[in-house]
Length: 429
Image (cartoon, rainbow, N blue to C red; front, side, top):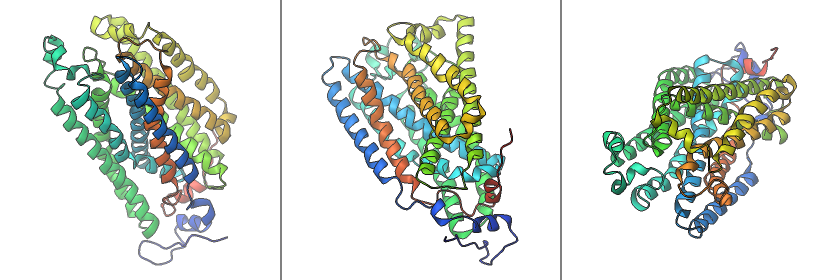
């Protein structure tokens, strides 16, 4: 069994370093996957492209609201991909800041997914182009100057709700996220080649101020691309709400990626039941956190009973959307909460994969609950196939690139100075 060569950052053998000794025990076959998940990538890309074409055709054949309906469905898919990549970027920086030794075994896949933020920007362009140049506010009603010229609320917010600022901020947001995502992954990949342990210190230092910038840009992105779809409504908890959903979904995706790799015979002895146990606890934690933030937002709006705020839930309490609310209550929180309480579920990676896949489906329902009611004149359940196709288009394209990215580098950071902690990790709780 071939072994991974181990040298220190100065080029001399250093068997005194515990991570070097741990690296010597790694099997080359367990941590490298040159072929990657090519077949899965091709399948996902095919489904994504077919979904986009079918949604575009459906938009032209479902009446006057078809374009808005298809665009809303596509927007859900874009937001899903955005949340997955942003969640992984945030998770990478959090793990670096906590100096979490156990996470060295799972961090590479978070870095891989976060590094696809430039692709998410490409997925964003059709929305921006359509809304600014073609549909003129089918989703973002404040862009329709003809109908909003006499709206005092939108006029009062025009300093923020204007196309120039909206487009400029989008470019800035993606530029900032891309910088941090590629830089952090670059440190990790370079460390695989050089063994320079000080790259870990650089990544940790960058994550310290990066987390603050990440929090601010993510919050304002959620205001721009979700909350501003209803310019009369506002919520002081919305940024945290979007963050909670993004973190929950990214952890679920990492579980699925690692689970598929284990099923392919990779990461044996590297990612163990103890690592899946910790990921399961993180998934449970952010499931609870999502429910807490969601309930607090609803409770504060119900308690204050301000018309500008209650309109959001009034719109979602009829026309079929009340079904989505009940589905989220039980499907997104109560059921996974109860299931994830069992230690056996968190330690069995196949069972945990099933829960993670379920939570990703529920996350799509959550985003649908946010976006779909903006399409006036179409009840939920009408042309539901258009909702599904529009969602699957951008999401499957993104997931296809995730599968492709898996084999582009070692499956774990093989020269991380905390590697020995990850390989010896035991979970007793």
